[in-house]
Length: 506
Image (spheres, one colour):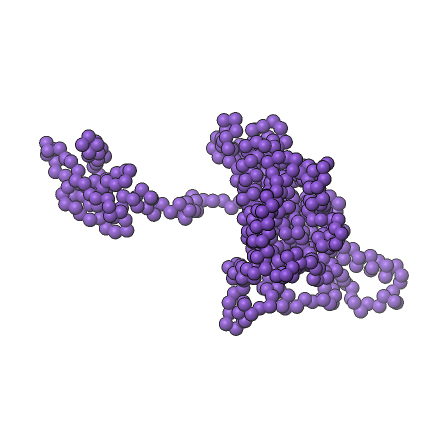
């Protein structure tokens, strides 16, 4: 886009996780290792042209399924299957692993935007959202107050029916809180600032409502980027501007791609052109989208899931193992460590609770009361340290800077050759190398005492072919090129120009 005589390039990149990838009803919730379904990282980049490389600004946000153990059994006769908590995790180990993974990747603060319904006559989405809050409360219990996960519940369906405040106003408040806490990446004139922390958005499918939420947050982030890059004085987004429409189109395209891969159809809700409401597709288009999604979920998702497992290497064919189509479930493919079993006995973790000088068989009954009390206090302190290790290690790794590896000239040359392939022919060379390009003899001056040298016609991938003692010019299409090669360097450019000029006059 061109703004005030300057060029601004806006790029939107969506990166889908490969760890727990799959389709809508076959991949829900979280795996034992803390990887969630439909995990997508969206990065919004703004580049302002200027001296040298110019100025850059970027903002990252993520989406992912609710990190608890829940599922929905697909059925041909039931378009909306009920939500079931299929496993009980009293310590919320998988949810803590997911939070630790986010802290490791993006550092703190971590803001969670939950867009599920929180008031239903017949509980459906409320079942999993309530379990999600319990998991976050359990994770925050062992974390200090300034490092805790910030949970924000916004009932998208109820807010979209409300006159004041509107759903976009509520999302704008969340965007302002997030940007104030995390900031965004900015680089100009050799200086840069980093984004610390991330906003994690989710609804039930992480498709339609999440698309609108991420676009709203991205629009507010773009407003601050423009102010930082010197395009505007105000950090507030301008509704209805040309740049806003371009950003809306980018998020709509990315949202449709994610929805096609995970849900089997395009997204239902579209970003509107006005700031007061969310645009909704016509009724007939909504009906067709629902039919496509229902057909894909009921009939083709299982084959798509098998293809994804093979493509990503989750399932590796083996003659000694049953084939993929004979497996009842792919649970053990995504949780391979579960096959070996889990040690549940506290005796295997005695080093966590007991010190080197203590033993399980110590006689606490015969020891003095003060000594037993001190021993209990020490064990409780070690327990608190052990329970807090998951987020301490994640924050330490996320806060540590990632040094960039130096790139020497040889490595840069190899990368250039690998990306651009300079050894291959260009399109211009391919056109001139076709059979319809006929050689035309060059015109030489009769008074020139110096006889023309023997020239060879160069052919792609082969040796040059001698065409006699005369030079040849290959003409074709919209251009011309002298396919001649001298044994010694000579001024052939003048001869070529003279030949072209003479043919133009004729």
